[in-house]
Length: 466
Ligand SMILES: *Cc1c(COP(=O)(O)O)cnc(C)c1O
Image (cartoon, rainbow, N blue to C red):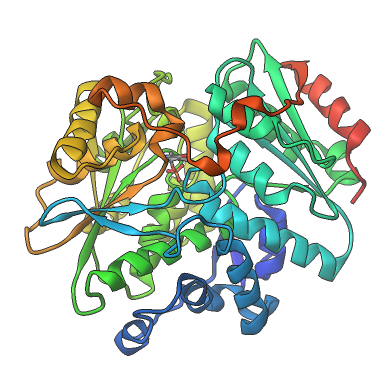
């Protein structure tokens, strides 16, 4: 399978190349040249497979010749063997129509583990095949950083430099990063910086000729195609359990960077009978506005109790607009250049109508979120985190045909955000035993000023050349 850039001006790469590159050289995002499609019989034959085997079946068409089926299965077995639940992503019933898909049973308690545990193994595999070193540079508002660090700690040929805004991530989130003491893990707290400042430093590094000449800089956020690919699998897992391919299923997805819900779009292109994808946002609602009226314009970020969704610019939306707009790289590049200049753009009619066929959206404020947490607790005895609650609010507010099951993706363990859960229910969720000593572990973290040169010098002094 070949991968092409949404902006049409970067060379096509195979799966291994797209995985190691992350962002395309023209500033675009990689997508497979076409969507592989399963027949109904092929999907029916996936029912009942253990998760690691299902993952191999769903991902093999995307991986192509980069890995044999045997090797891919070994990697999925290793990646998902570290999850604390035998089903990997168990499905929980809330009432006659609503279900939760628990994606937080990985090592760092958020859905990011599902993709990053595999991505760490893919990096190691392709580096071994090709030789050389990889320098991962990322910015995090919390969950991506800990999941990426856990996935690559101690792996040969890889260094990871993870930037977080000092004092702006929760104690649990910070400790999940800074207590990993492997020599290839470098945590950097940026003084007087926001998440956007940290992300701007990372983006600038991908375009710094001096740095990319010396170091192979890789990406772990959802601009990396391999992450989205791994997330397609759990849409199949959930729908198969609820009767697909004979029955349609809808999904509600707490959304920030549009990666998770785009994986649902990919599942639908592959033949899974997805009735609706409900994009759930908090008050940072650029996507709700874009899907409702075609107005994609960024405002300022309002901090909420669901920080992983406090985002204004959703990188992966570009992948959807490119696919819906006839896959025209030149016009996508022009549309994005306009957006980058003015922080606003209007969707074309083709893009709007195409999106409306599958996507719906809903927005939740703080009260909606707290009510959804209480509803799940009072009605079904489930404690859910603020991000999941926003998804559940959207699922219930959308008015899906009662004959169609609606699955809300549960993206984080409630113990990652205990204050909001306790405020809504009076119950404080406790950390699972396997990470219960987090607050006794030693921390290691560098503090740097939030300036590009300071960060680049720090990385250049420690990373291994390509
Ligand atoms: C990252 C994250 C999201 C948003 O996912 P996207 O793929 O960026 O849309 C939602 N909830 C939690 C808990 C997250 O960590």
